[in-house]
Each structure stands twice: as C-alpha cells, then as structure tokens.
Amino acid sequence: MAGGTLIVGASQAGLQLAASLRQFGDNRPITLVGEEIHPPYQRPPLSKEFLSGESDAESLALRAASYYADAGIDLVSGRRVTEVTLASSGRPGSGVARTADGRSFPFDRLALTVGAAPRRLSVPGADLDGISCLRDRDDAADLRGRLESSARVVVVGGGFIGLEVAAAARALGKEVTVVEAAERLISRAVAPVVSEFYRQAHLRRGTRVLLSAAVAGFEGADGRVTAVRLADGAVLPADLVVVGVGVVPRTELAEQLGLACDRGIVVDAHARTSNPHIRAAGDCTVQPHPVTGVGTVRLESVQNAVAQATAAAASLLGRPVGAAPVPWFWSYQGDLKLQIAGLSTGYDEYVVRGEPDSERFSVLYYRQGELLAIDAVNSPAEYMAVRRALMDGASVPPSLAGDPGTPLKSLLAARRRPAVPSP
Image (cartoon, rainbow, N blue to C red; front, side, top):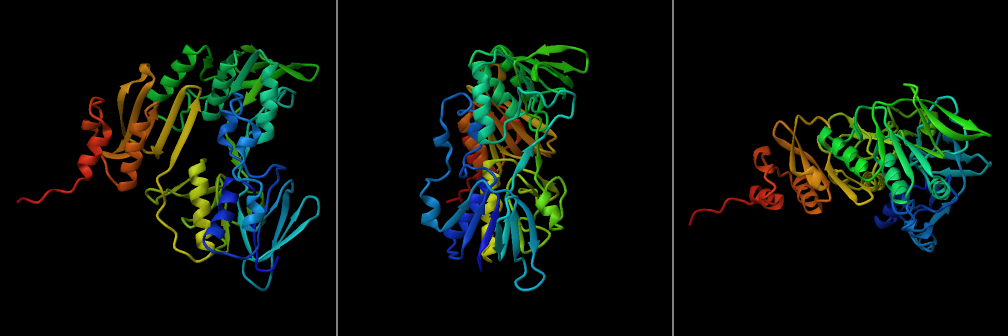
C-alpha cells in the first residue's frame, strides 16, 4: 500500500475522514479497517428508532454498499488492529499495522478513529446473562430481542443513553426503573431545571426513577440476572438490566505508539496528535475547547466526529482547516426531543423560556452575560435561532431572553442588524 493512508476504526469519523480525503482530491490508496463485521453505520438511532423497532438495520448504513469501491476506499471489516509500529527510517509517520488474525497493513499516513468502549460495572454478578450494554449494532439487536421477552427492565445510568433506552422500553409496555448514582439526571450536561423536568416527565410516563442510588451488585439464578441490589439494601427484581454509565475512550494503540493521552487521545484543532504525522478523530479524542480554545474537552457526537474527521483530512493534505463549528447534540426520548447547541460548561446563569410542565421550553446558558448554549425541549425554532447566533457570535441579554412571548429569532436578529445611517 505504498503511499497510502490507513484509517483504523470504521466509525462515523473514520468514514468521514476517508470521504473527505477523496473530496479534497487525494487519489492515493485509502484503507479503512474496522473491528465490526458491519460497514460503517449510524449509532444514534441504536438507542432510539432502532431499539423501538421503528427502523431496521439496513436503514442504519451511512453509505450505499457500492460507495466504497466507487470511491476507491478499501473497506476491511471484521478485523481488529492490535499492533501498530512506526518505521525507523523513510517517510515520517509511515509504518505497519497488524490485526489479531495476522494481517498486515503497511501505511504512509495513519489516522486513529477507534471510538470508545462502554464502561463496565465492577460489582458482584456483573457477568450474569441478561445484563446488557448498548454501544454497537450487535448490542442493539441483542437488546431489542431481549426486550421482547422481558417484563421488568432496570436501567443503570440516568444519562442520555440510559433515558433513551428507558423511554423505548416503557413505550413497549415494560415495567422500567432507572437507577442513577448522582443526585440528578444528566447532571454533567444540563442545568438542574432540565434534570428535574426529565425526572418528572419520565415519572409521568410510568418510569420509576431512583436518584443517589448506587448499585452494589446483581443477583441471579441459573446464570441469569434476576435482580439489582442497591447499596442501601433495596432489591429491584429484573428480567433485563441495561448498563449505561458512560464510555471509555480506546487509547490502547495510541499508548502503544507513545502518543499523549489524557482522558482520550490528545489532539489539536487540526486533529494532530502529539506525533504531528498521526491524526485522530471522534470519541477517542480530547481536543481544545472548540469555542474558546482554552482547556480540553471530549465531545461524543456525530457533529464532532464529522467536523474533526474533516479537519484531520484537510491537515493531512496540507489544506487550511476552517474555524471549529459550534457543537450540537440531540437526545430523543420518545416524544421528548432535546436539542443542544453550544457548550454550557462553566455557566454562571441560565434563563428558562416557557413552562417545563408544558413539555415545550428552552434553557439559555450564560457566562458573564454572554450566551453560551441552549437546551431546547420540543422547541426546534429556538434551538435553530441560538445555534445560528452562536455561529455568528451574536447574543441576547438574559434580561430579554426570558420573555417567551418574544421570539428569540427576532431578538437575536435585532442585535445582529447593523445600524442604519442617518439620512
């Protein structure tokens, strides 16, 4: 594969990096190696439409099967890269990768888009059958099948994935309990008012929610889980347990290569690792804050995977890398559609627009009076208005933002409009 690029990880970021190289005019060989047997697919629907049965596996594909050959991308599925060695001489950044089954892939350029693995619970009984996680397509297919024959479902973890799974299970008529170790739901991502809204909304739909509840272990019979035991001694009967307590970036290959890692593979705004010849993108990375450039963040989202992979491709080819886009995310929990634009980390004030009990409202986050982000629940127009404002560097004072009778779009547009010169 002389002169070629090897991308390890057939993820959304991996595919985007390969596609961007082609879009930017690179005609050298590209090999995309993935551990899963499936071609690159969308992950967000796994805990939403796919789990609830509203979509099938075929609809998850990111590209048609013919795309890879047409684009000259050698897609190698079902192969796990376990070793990467850089050449001691010759082109900087070149080397060879080897898979668990002995295949070798020489490369002149290397990119890691290896994603993250689900965090596991180290408690007694954690290896019982019937304890599932949800990270990849096979996990989702297995979980969908198990849901059909389960009456009592316990979800461990009150983050986005946990609540999405809980909503899907409840919509199927299951008895659902969410167990969250923190004092509130989605505590790392949203303000207390949003956490409380989701607690109340899930309660209204029949889901039991336990906060400040630590899992001490799992009980079982004949090798299969039958209950979740909490630290306070409570026992929750369960036919199925879904563990959604976060993910761990996959840094094994990066560490093998001596790359800097700190909660993920450390990259700069151009997706360059500490070895300037190697790129990394997606959930496996930590990067400079995309808005302030100060400090590092780890962003788990489709938007970030696409943007970072595009930047990686551009920098590999020596092309200019555009300004970092405004981060955005979404979480669909049944009929509750949360859309987030910006990063609220470090906020010192927030403003609620609308009434949370109506299940249609938004929360604007500020730091020192400057707009940082929005959480919009069933409010797509407000989400789009703030996302556009953040892209344009516009803001609106907190004192004005709290009036739900005035559309945000008009407030933000008014601040962007240049002054009209006097006649």
